[in-house]
Structure formats: structure tokens, C-alpha cells
Image (cartoon, rainbow, N blue to C red):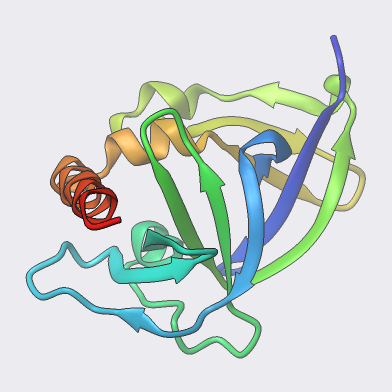
Amino acid sequence: MTNEKVVVFQCGNEEYAVPIEHVVSIEKLEQVNPIPHLPNYLIGLMKIRGELVPIIDFEEILYHRSGVNYENARVVTMHTQDMSIGILVKEAKEILDIQADDLKQIGLVNYTKTQYFTAVANLENRMITIVDPSILVRSLEGIKDIQSYLENVKKEEQATM
């Protein structure tokens, strides 16, 4: 078993992490273009390095409250198997190397609403829940429509070049 390198972030009072190979960047929340009639978890679209990225409010998904107004809020931009997304988190904390022995698989992957929780890192003074961003994206209601919209925008941009 090998170690897992992750980006740790906070939502609510808990710590979560995503494998570093998914992470593209960590950005401040700026200039989000809201789109009417989107699901509650989707703040809108943000242009990051020339690409339109849907911003998902992780605080909204987990605790049904917005994380937009947190002073240290950050957008963790990442690639999933399906698309690029930004996850708004309360605070981006650190990059951590977790020993394989400290990772425990959890039964919550069998619960349909939390399939994206793949493991828990049980460390000396803290517990960190590991999130699989690809499973998270696939579990979100309405995300396919947003993915189609972004693909059409990209095609239109390429056609005008």
C-alpha cells in the first residue's frame, strides 16, 4: 500500500480532503456569474485560467448552508472524469501525505447520499474524510445539464476562433 497525498480543506467544523492528482489550483472566490434556476449547491460559473468552471458550494451539499460569505473561503479547482469543477470550501488548509495504514474504508460509501466519501484518515489528533470528486460530481442532481451547457459554450468559442 502506498501513501495518499491529499489537499485538506474545511467545511463546517470538519476536515475533508481530495487526492492531489485531481487538484488543479486553489483560488479566491471572485466574479462568479450566477445562473437562474440552478440547483442550490451550484453558485454559478467562474472563469479560471480562461475556462468556465461550475462552482459547487460544498457547505451547501453537506450542511444546507452557504459557504460564500466565509472570509477564508477558497475554490479548490479540480478535474474529474467528467468535467472540471470548483468546490467552494470554508478554508483550504494544507497538502498532507497520509500513510496508507491511517486510511480506513468506511461503510458510508454504501449510503447513496455519501457515496463520494471513500475513506477516513484516522490521524493522531484529527479525522479527515476523503472525497472522490468524480463520484461527487456524478451524484449531484442536474450536473449533466451543466456539463452539456459548458460543452456547448466551448464548441461555440472554438467555432468563432
